[in-house]
Image (tube, rainbow, N blue to C red; front, side, top):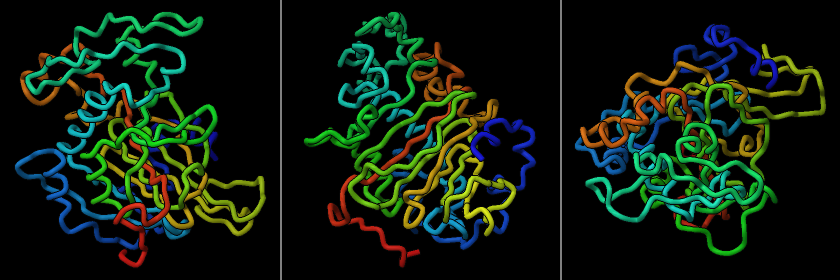
Length: 342
């Protein structure tokens, strides 16, 4: 199933009746649930805006995959930009948040001195472009430009997952960014304690896998920003090698599946039976980043436009995915998952 979607032409994906999105909802998703009544206030507080209109405050549940919920067009433009600013300027510049590059390079971080008018520094600042990050082994030296354009693949927040040993290290993790935690905790029925920020370019994929390292079965949430992606998720009722992607459920195959075309601002929540479902991203679709987002980070104030002009258009070829997990058992905090609220 994964390989077939990986090979599917983007034009065919546009017409595929088996790929769900807001414009082509079928019987596979239903049960239009309410989101938090104060969603606008949550977004205003996060993006420090005077007012934010919530376009489509809806969520849908997958009928054949209990616990899988789809939130189309959840995050307004200002919230998406604010989230990118926090993740890729502030949090990437914090050495406590490890990346895929730390195994192979000693990263040279922007100096903790004021550069922007808000006192911030960023890897996207012009003075970092030619900085070389020293390799630990036989790797070629890495400049910041190469790092941002292709080599940087993921950033961890909060619980620093060890991707080599597939475990969370012992000991207290770095604090999860408080403002992003508040956004997640208030919007979704979970507590943000660990996250991975995935950076994709068209042609990149995420292999089929399950997230099973957390100490609890509380939900995980995935937020998409930038280019569209095909997201597949499935549960197997019984062992069977025969898979039919044309049917969301087939008694003969024992496979229950859903395929979503995730767009910028969409979110997916995996809970209940679907918390440990197999899932992956077989395709990121080029040329699908929203027009208003393509020039990030050179957007917004005139200061930002000038400060980050060397990276104007960077987001036009990127998909950023924020995947947030709760590490510990219910009761670690106040926000405990209860499906009865839906």
